Structures are given as C-alpha cells and as structure tokens.
Amino acid sequence: MEESIFQPYLGNRAIFKMDREILRPSYIPERLPHREAHIGQLAQVLVPALKGERPSNVLIFGKTGTGKTAVVKYIENEIKKADAARLVHYLYLNCEIVDTPYGVLQGIGNKFIENFNQRIPFTGLSTDRVYSLLVEKLDEERRIVVIVLDEIDKIVLKSGDDILYQLLKINDDLSRARVSLIGISNDLKFTEYLDPRVRSRLSDEKMVFPPYNAEELFDILLERSKLAFDNGTAPDAVLSLIAALAAQEHGDARRALDLLRVSAELAERQGDDHIGEEHVMRAKNKIELDTVIEAVKSLPTQSKLILLGILLNEELGNSKLTTGEVYTTYRELCRKTGVAPLTQRRVTDLISELDMLGLVHARVKSFGRAGRTKEIQASVPLLDVKKILEKDEVLAELRGYRLRVQTTLM
Ligand SMILES: Nc1ncnc2c1ncn2[C@@H]1O[C@H](COP(=O)(O)OP(=O)(O)OP(=O)(O)O)[C@@H](O)[C@H]1O
Ligand SMILES: [Mg+2]
Image (cartoon, rainbow, N blue to C red; front, side, top):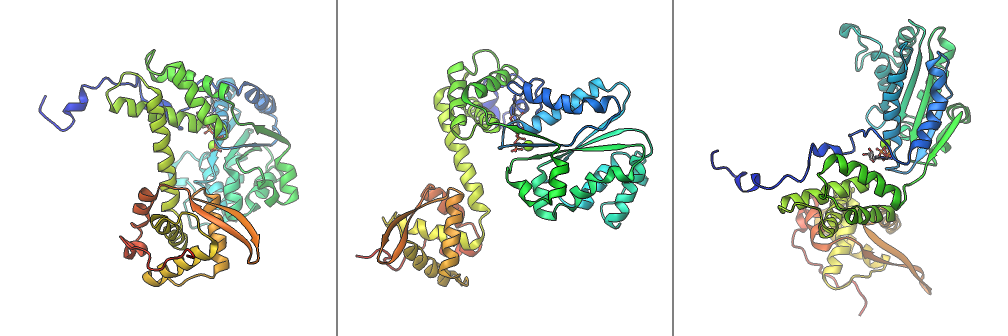
C-alpha cells in the first residue's frame, strides 16, 4: 500500500465490531428493553386496524430520549408482519421536517400515488385542493390509514391546529377508507395550544413514556453494545457509569448512547482496545462542550453581546455581576460594534433566557434599598466560548477587546 496520511491510524484495532451506526439515533433496534408494556398497550389500541376497523387516536408524551420515536417505528415493522391482508397503511411523518399543513397533506397523499407524474407538487395548489386530492386517493380502497405525527407540537406552534382539525374530521369525507392519528410530543404542555375539540378527539388514548432510570439505561446500553462491540470492549463498569451519568440528566437514552459512542470513538482514536472510565469522562466533557457551543452559535446577536460582556468581565476577575453591571458592559460593547442597544428591561429578559439555556447562572441576591438584584455569572468555559462568539461577524470588532470601564464598584 502506498504511504498516506491515514497510514499511522490504519493499524489501530477497530473498536467497533460492526457499523458504528448501531449507536446512532437513526438505528432501530430489534428489541426495546423496558418499553414492552408501552408496545403492548399500543398494540392493543391498534389491533382493530388489522380487522379493518378504525383504531382510536393516540397521543404519546414523554421527555426527550424516552423511546417514543423508537417505539412507533418498531410498531410499524410489527404491523407489516401481522397485516397479511395489506389493509393497514402506517405512515410516519416528522413535523419538525414537514412543518406546514400543505406539506403534511401532500406527504400523505403522495404515499398513495405510485405514478410519479401524478404526484402532488411541492407548491402551486391550494391547501383545499391538496385536501380533496388526498380524500379522493385515500378513498379508492377500503383501508385503514394510521398517520403518525412525530414532534406534533412543532407544527402546531408554527401553523396552528387547523391541520389536526382537518385530519381528525377527514373520516366524515371518506366512505371506504378510515384514518387514525398517533401524535407524539415531548412538550407536555402542548395540548394547551389546541382547540378543545381537537384536544379531545386527538387524545382518545393517552400514553406517557417515563424517563429511564439508571438500571434501565444499563440494559439498553448492554443490549446495544453486544451488537456494536466484541466482548470486553465495553465493560459492565463502564456501561454502569454511562447509565448513571445519563440518569442524572433526565434519563435520556439518546444521551446515554451518544456517550457510549463518543467514548468508544475516543478509545479507538487512542488505539485502546477497550473503553475505560477516563474515556467516558472525556466524552462527557466533549459532548457538553459541543452542546454549549451549538447553543452559543445559535444565539441572536444581542444575546451574544450580553454573554461576551459577562465573559470579558470574568477575564478581569469580576465573575459575579449585577444586572446593572452587565448592562453597562453591554452598552459599551454596543457602542464599539455599532449595534443599537436594547433597554435594560429587555436585556434583563435576555439574561433570563441565557440562564434558561444554562449558559449563565443568575440568582436573586438581595432585597436591599435598590430593590431586588441579581447576581449573574457565566457558566460556560471562558476561552472556548469567547472564541466562538468572536466568530460572529458583528462581534468580530471585539476580537481581543478588553473592557475599558471598571464595572465593579470600588
Ligand atoms: N427501550 C429502548 N431500547 C433500546 N434503545 C432505545 C430505547 N429507548 C430509546 N432507545 C434509543 O434511544 C434513542 C432515543 O430514542 P427516541 O428517538 O425514541 O427518543 P424520543 O422519545 O423520540 O425522543 P425525542 O422526544 O427527543 O424525539 C434512539 O437511538 C433509540 O433507538
Ligand atoms: Mg422522537
């Protein structure tokens, strides 16, 4: 083989037995430990479909990483296996991707149109027209259509609940086909945005997926690592540690699997033949930093200025600031960059948002003569985040800037 830049690494023992995709969120495992009861419950709701009857609508709630998407995709395979008569059409749509009423109707309609030339176009028709095309298509045969709307809260927040209303009453316009809905949301409060009629129809049945505890996460990790690694690559002690860490943060299986994958990648890169606790701790830091960096990158400019101001103060040794001090620094940075400053009230709101994102820590300190004051502190690594902020075009002016005014009172 010719000499190449990859040469030194090619000899490393591959730590992944098969595809590393096995640890990625898109992989659908054949078994879902600790979701047997939920799968059974859903099967019970859906079984009428196999007999040509319309199942109840279902609303599934649960925090992120509790297996909602995995379970509905698993059910899809099971239905295919059981549905010898080909009566049931099980359609999965992610409303974060297809996020308009037109897109949803078009997406469903096109699943029933085989001839490419007759497909409903991406734009150009009225939503009403797409709806009638859909009704016409669906009703060509006697069939049961189960539509899974994953991340249903996203479309409701963006376009309101008209689309749900339309899909819920589509059965009135059908004579042969029957439609049921399965809605999925990780926002428990989302039904508050729904019209009461939509809410009650959509939630014939309600299911809640609880967060996984450490033991459950351990089983999920064990199951998956048997597929991904050779024996001994991911020792039980390591899986326990990962499970414990992920359980501390709201029992998210995606988080646990990410941690396992990144730990394995770090071990592999180092040429180690098994994952150790030190890889896990490094993976945890790496993932946390990546998350912070993503959050910082997507902040609006005004919030970036506020955060940078807090960090520049920290650089001078003032790590705990009052709202007034943050505002003074923010005004200075606005002047320097030519950004029109917001009012102190608005800046206070943005500080609360930064707090909610976990980027700063703001706590009420005193009720002195000046009223209630907050103590604000960055909770992100100074240098890494400063570097990211300075990449913003507007903030580029501030590269290497040091605060002019001393904001703390002497
Ligand atoms: N019981 C389980 N057994 C095996 N793997 C699981 C289980 N539950 C979840 N997973 C895995 O964890 C990851 C996250 O699960 P999933 O995507 O289903 O979460 P979710 O509840 O849909 O979260 P979100 O609300 O963020 O969409 C996926 O990779 C999935 O395969
Ligand atoms: Mg999901």
